[in-house]
Image 1 (spheres, one colour):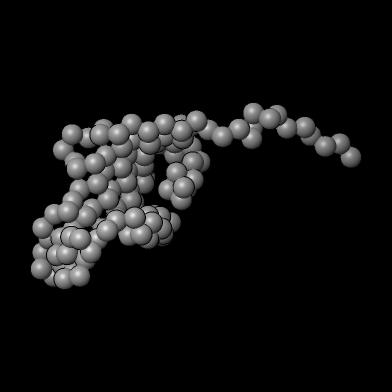
Image 2: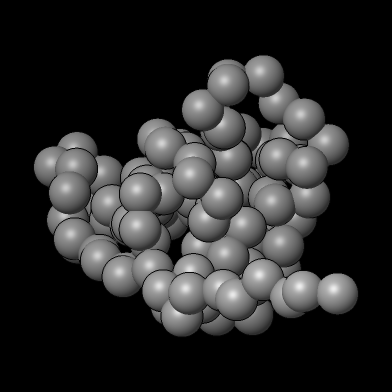
Length: 120
């Protein structure tokens, strides 16, 4: 029985890059890449929102993940859920009651690294 040897290059981490303030019209934005996987992220808020969406105790956080395919899937909704939980623990939303904060993630290229970029 012969075992194939694998190159060490197959186990190297893909280089990560981040360019902040990529979009001029958002409150915060970045373009993230890990290898050839690329995502564009923007944050807007706190903003005034409709009365039906407001929380009197804290800011309402909305997370939107759009895959390159464009069609929302169950996996995309799960990514939104994980990102929302992470952001809720990082944002002091009680300082901004009755407002909304929107985090948008647009997958530009996926070469097998979107999940690692999303989940940290």
